[in-house]
Amino acid sequence: MGLFQKPDIQFSNESSQYNMNEKRITCPHCGNDRFFQLPNILLNTPGITFFGFDWANKTASVLICDSCSRMEWYLRTPNQLD
Ligand SMILES: [Zn+2]
Image 1 (cartoon, rainbow, N blue to C red):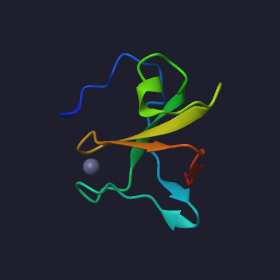
Image 2 (image 1 turned 135 degrees about the vertical axis):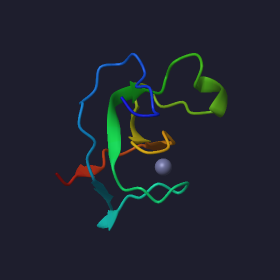
Image 3 (image 1 turned 90 degrees about the vertical axis):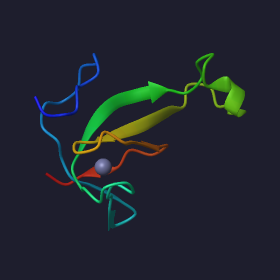
Image 4 (image 1 turned 45 degrees about the vertical axis):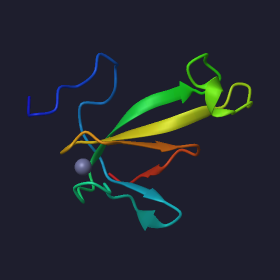
């Protein structure tokens, strides 16, 4: 266990590298390129609707930097590289 305590959500133990639109995803905070991926998260939950999203049953993919724990949200699923 490193500095980053994993949240109590089931996701893969190994971090991976990801691409979006043919470009490697890197963390804007620390520059790391390895992420944990959370299961797809439904966006039409009460906590999210105040953003103005009205998409029923839309999901988001969330990547968590395995170094600094910054969360990156994507509406499409990034391509896993390894
Ligand atoms: Zn980071």
